Amino acid sequence: MAERIAMLGAGSWGMATANLLAENGHEVTLWEFDRTEYQKLVEDRSIPEKLKNFVLPESIRITHDLNTALDDVTLIVLAVPSQVLRAVVSKIDNLPLDVGIVHLSKGIEISSLKRMSEVISEELHTATIDIAALSGPSHAEEVIRRMPTAVVAAGASESFVQRVQSVFSNSYFRVYDSPDLIGVELGGALKNIVAIAAGIADGLKMGDNTRGAILTRGLAEITRLGTAMGAQPDTFAGLSGIGDLITTCTSGHSRNRHVGLSIGRGATLEEVLAGMVMVAEGVQTARSGFELACRHDVEMPITTQVYKVLFEDKPAQQAVSELMSRKLKSEIWQ
Image (cartoon, rainbow, N blue to C red; front, side, top):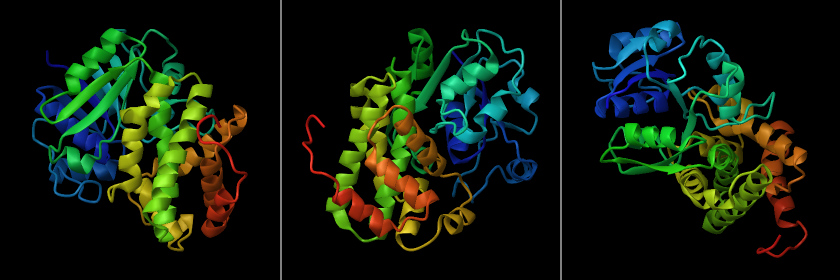
């Protein structure tokens, strides 16, 4: 059954997902908050700086007005950066109870240390709206080329998650379902910190052994924090955990790996961010992830060192040396 969908956010992933949903036969309205970017989309139906070699199909309606985007919709998809998600959701008024929300944001709010579904529920002032997170290894650049992609949808309502699964799935985009909303959200957010670490190591020319160690031990600390916050440990062995981690830490499409790579080569964080059009969620998630580790008394050495490199001007080589000189431990039960 076709849905009337408001896609809020016209970044690379927002455009790619809007295209996916339109291809699936749904009626899609794409909302862009920035007037200049909106005008580009209206005139060219493309923003090459965000997504190269892609033109939005004519079937997708584009608007700058949020009320227009939300008019008579059956599903809202949020594709905005995590640190502005609250501001966007706060503008949504009088939402019918049968309208569900899917968010694609992979981050943790800095000010509150809340997951995105918690932010959405808090701003809508209701616990009755169905909310799901869609996460996993899914670069927009490959989805628009219809490369086989698998992700996971998670939420508290099994029927709503299965509805999301049906809405998004097609011959090249496969959606699994999960009840573990906490784990899926944390896996999608925290792996970006590890991707920055992997990029730093690559920038320092440390090789495959180092990258393998960062991915493995990064997954271990993500799992430690996730389970401390109520997630199921098996979730981190899935698409939103190790699947997204591998892709983000090794891909040339990864904005978070790009940040680390540039820093490993000697650039400052300010220089890197000044040269980027799209948001690298892992930069701010390094703050919130570090603070969550402190709050829950969970040891996260890679996250800690990334935080110190990004925000305390710690030399990257020194961070690596300190990781390697930590007290020796057992892998299995430590």
